[in-house]
Length: 395
Ligand code: NIG
Ligand code: FE
Image (tube, rainbow, N blue to C red; front, side, top):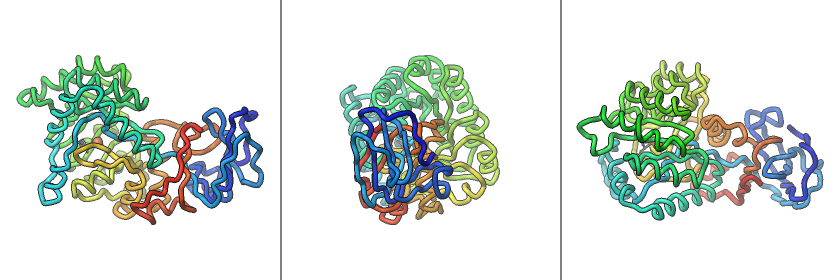
């Protein structure tokens, strides 16, 4: 809240002053849905935002960072990333750009390489991608398993992911493991039984790829129900490759998010707008698979809550850049620059059911991005330019 102070500042408090435009995502604090405050300052202490208001009224703090003329926003919240893998699929991408279609089958290539990699290789790859995320302004990110597809390989993917983030997702139901190619029902039994039992201690979420070449609606329901019985909250890869049941399955399960939503009907949008399930759009996936972009404008106009995420993975979307996703969502999905910034911060937080991140109001985590630009609009107005000047994580 503007001008409000939370207790007294400790010796380590830091004031960020001279902010040309502060995105709070707190409509009570400023203008519009982004809660924009001009000529603003904020004070962080103990990893939290403790004061937000005009620079002229900023209380003294031990350390001051003057960012004169810069826009400041909450760290990006990337609610969908597959960072536990080895190898890449550059040749597959090149073939696709030369006319080959994208198919879920490419996942098996990464499964083979991930299984063959030792822990240090997977940990180093995760660390490298997490560092890329941070450099481009992401301060909260989710990581899925899904390239192991054995009990041991899924368990270690999640164990290593947990070293990097608390937002870990069990995606044993990414595709049917090669050993079960002729017995998909047997694979679902493995996923919902011993694999889930081994993975649940390292996971917060359960996910399933409900689409062509992956799992059907009944299989997806079984996976989500088994996960829920172990305390994992549901999220769903839905409607990426074709129209189908993914969104319905997600909404019926009370999923926090239905991700991709590339192919939607009016009925799908009605289901989403009447629920708490966020539609997480992944512009990198349509970009890198030459798929049609979903109509984000239509979703927002229908009252759907929209998030943006990278979907970082070696097959369909090998980017860690939320600024890239923002720019593409504005250009290709019909979001305004402000809507895209909201979707990449507060929207991502909603997709992870978090209220401590994705906003810069008193009491929120002090995850702060300073842009080398005077306004949030520049994130889409200057595509491909590295505008993230500084990232403060929990202060
Ligand atoms: O979200 N859709 C399923 N999974 C990934 C793709 C994984 C891959 O191609 O390796 C996605 O796009
Ligand atoms: Fe994905």
